[in-house]
Length: 240
Image 1 (cartoon, rainbow, N blue to C red):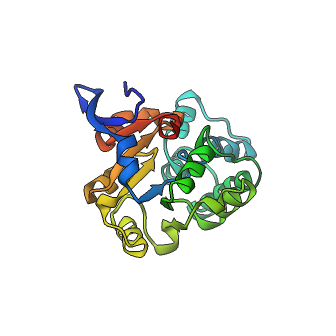
Image 2: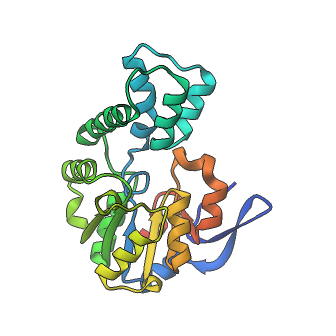
């Protein structure tokens, strides 16, 4: 099991273990901080994980235990694909995807709040004069709602929503775009994220990667450990 801490992590025999690099020291010398939002700054993953069941409930469909387990674990597009395969929804896939996005956006307007310690962490980055850029695979509308109603927009110098550029954090192009526009080398930056593929992508470019503990991502912990240079639970070590 991955152990929290602001240290470099790697994987050996299925276990994460600490390495000498200290992420708090890396923070001191990194002028640019890249932040994922969902599951990293925003406590929003429950909306994504419960949306498929809510969409099915609208149609009077109750998944069995195994179907419910799968829908809680997979991410948005995979959840839509799975529902199309498993249930007779009687509408095209695009309609299901659009309906679920609308349900999720409603949650961003009202019920998404910062994760524990996230706002204090953002305030610390401001005090230290860091350049702060959000890099997300979410769409601009949902992110705009959440940052606005939580008063978080003021902490970000830039917000990059990968879909707005026809990109995804699964490939390096979005990070290359961010580095180019922000004017930093990969070695100048740290990325905080809760999912394995952005950590993998950023690390391949030479960006220092910090995994942020998120309960909904723990089933992916082996991949996260392999991709992360560091692991943190609630940002508290960075505030000391």
